[in-house]
Every structure is written in C-alpha cells, then in structure tokens.
Image 1 (cartoon, rainbow, N blue to C red):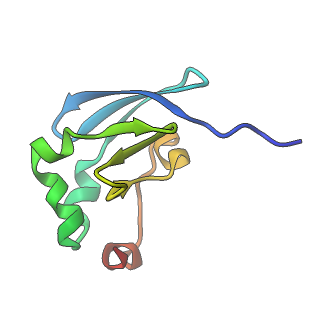
Image 2 (tube, rainbow, N blue to C red):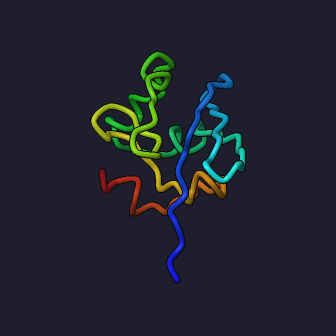
Image 3 (spheres, helix red, strand yellow):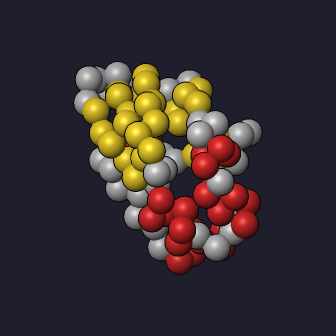
Length: 93
C-alpha cells in the first residue's frame, strides 16, 4: 500500500522570514526560516536574507521553492516544521 505524497497548496507571508503553509491534507504550519538562513554559510543561500528576495517564494508542483530551485526544502520537513540541519549541509550548496 503506497501513500500519496503531501503537497503544499498555499503559502502566506507572516513577516520576518515566516510563512504560514497549508497542506493538501488540511494541516497548517507556520515555519520560521530565519534561523536556517542565518546559520548557513553559502552566499547564494544567505542572499535570501534580503526580504525582497525571500518574498519571491512560490509553490510549484506542491513544493515551496525560490528562484530556479535555488532554495527549497523537503515537504516533509516543512510539514513537521523541522528545518534542522547539520554542518555538512551548510557547505554543500
């Protein structure tokens, strides 16, 4: 038995790098991206600390993305509101 993947159907800006996400199963989650953005070292990712650039997120195929998938997160991490990462990811991009 396979499960259908979870999709994001709506993203609403809540200020200061927060987005309120609605998923196709009805769950809602307010996600704060600021801790992640301030921890990473890669300049391309840190560029999303520019509020105008961060505000350009969009939903594409049920995923939340910025640019040409310059910045994206696994939907399950957003669903669980767990953007934690380790030091290997900070320099991988």
